[in-house]
Amino acid sequence: MVCKEGRLIGADKTRNCVTGNGTSILRFADALSLGTNDLTQHTMAAGRQNPLVHRYYQDDHLAVIRLIRLAVKEAGSALIGVCGELAGQPSAVPMLLDVGVRQLSVAPPLVPTIREAVRHPPE
Image (tube, rainbow, N blue to C red; front, side, top):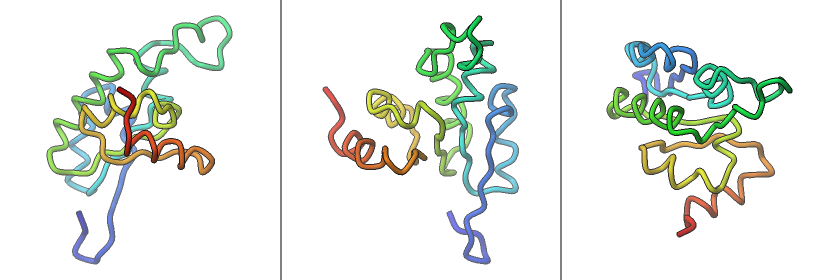
């Protein structure tokens, strides 16, 4: 989607996704980016850098994927992107595409691997 001025306006909605009211920002933005690192931390109540609870940090947990699916559904035709560690995992690409994610933001060294996973998902 393009604004009248020809610019795409985006917003990060990680915390709002957890509270369930994130798509209300679409009145002001054309695209949403879900930060899966924080989303997972809030959902799983576990930080990946905290040695006491990091084993509970599972960014591909069904609860996290359900929240992503909900955000995509509520966003309608708006572009939903995913950034964070989950977006850079080739094994997660088919699942993210299946729930409707259409943009993945990854570190530059991961681009070729993720591009290949998008084009030829593992069976």
